Amino acid sequence: MNRRSFLKQIGVASLSVFPLACATSGWVKAKRGRPNILFIFSDDHAFQAISAYGSKINQTPNIDRIGAEGAILDNCYCCNSICAPSRAAVLTGKHSHVNGLRTNGDRFDGGQQTVAKLMQEAGYQTAMIGKWHLKTDPTGFDYWEILPGQGCYYNPDFRSSGGKKRYSGYVTDITTDLALDWLEEKRDKNKPFMLMCQNKAPHRNWMPGPKHLNMYDDVTIPEPSNLFDDYANRSSGLKQNEMSIAKHFMFDRDLKVTGSKIKDALGRDYSNYELKRMNPEQKQLWMEAYGPKNEAFEKADLKGKELTRWKYQRYIKDYLRCVASVDDNVGRLLNYLDSNGLADNTLVIYSSDQGFYLGEHGWYDKRWMYEESFRMPFLAKWPGVIKAGIRSSKLAQNIDFAPTFLEATNQNVPDDMQGVSLLPLLEGKKPAGWRKSIYYHYYEKGEHNVPRHYGVRTERYKLIHYYDLGEWELFDLKNDPREMKSLYDDPAYESVRKKLLAELRKLEKQYQVPS
Ligand code: SGN
Ligand code: CA
Image (cartoon, rainbow, N blue to C red; front, side, top):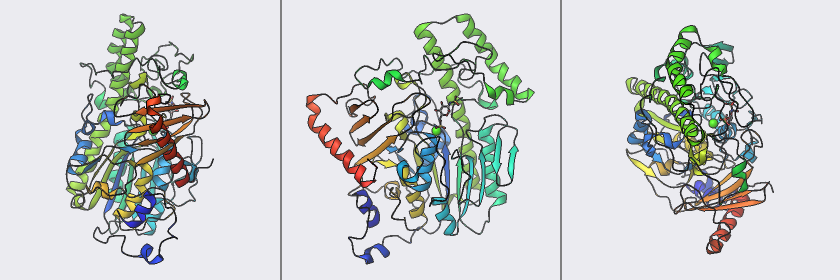
């Protein structure tokens, strides 16, 4: 770790107390040259659905390959578990309260410093392709072609500086086609590149592509042990959730029971708008795949827990089918690098804007500071710099991605970025003084009714404050990795609670969180 990173880790934001000479030379190593960066980012891809993270429910051979040839971070977390805020943190290297994007409803200020602009100024060709979701147009990219808003799975529209264009086909394939086309035809091959290839999948409403419609038809996916969580011993906020597998799926749109008018617990029966986008051939394949399965479901007339179990199976299979297409397309990108002599000089990263509930706590969606949605997958390969098979459990965060890109390409990390480069971890080092805690803050009041909260996670514990409810939770992740019982009021944890609170206040000061 260079000295600048070290100062940030220990919470010294300003360099002014140290001699200036230290700040200007010797910290940024010259050995790495100017590699390309291929950043593959998915939307809502949970670590539980990646075999390199020990998935019990699917295989992701191409994503795994990145980790097998490089490094895997086991404790990488987002600063705010929702789409646009996570993306803004990645671009700026800053927490939500600093980059100004706290909720999906906010507009990103593209006038501010971003890693894309810094890379561009350093002579890189930069491209943003796929899901963007920041409301304002991308800045700092030589080329961008993005999905409007959340985008569609079938025959999606894309927007570029030249206007809107509809492509026929499946969004994950098309996003990768556009990325490959930029690599092959559109970039200036005399310059190094940073390509951000960002999938819509596996976001709700989990529409599988034509190739994967019947995958998992003959298997039963194992359920998480807490699918029927009763929310005892934790904040009252859990019971108020509107993201429950049992209660908050719309049969037609989410569960693909076409024509169903069964309402969810909130009285909604939205239909699946994606079906209207399909051409006759796509629609036929779809109906052939889902028709018989839906008939069997209707005949079975399930009730209670059996119905919830059926919903879980339908949901998880569709989610995993979307992931299968992501994985195939990761393979296409890796093959392109291999066969065009680019692999050796390219840092490839696979990650996702946040995690997701795959039935844990009875849920789908994200937002909470519990592990499944807080944690992000992070796998990286860079032959010659990252040795094969590195695995780090140190605490990393999405605000670290921009500093990582900058350090990897031999640039200074601006002092106002709040993250630190992850390269030491990826290189298998165990830097002394690495951060011992992570700050988190979820601000959105809206869909899924998750109470706003902030908190701190250390290597072993987690403290969460639901400030609108005036409630706290404390988890011992070593003894209770599924976060089923808060120990906040347990006298045996009195000193742990005090230490965590002090740590939280320290982080708030370090990151200049407004009170
Ligand atoms: C949509 C989804 C929500 C999801 C948000 C945010 N509803 O609104 O389930 O939480 O996006 O997702 S849907 O009915 O429109 O599918 S995010 O990844 O963009 O933050
Ligand atoms: Ca997301």
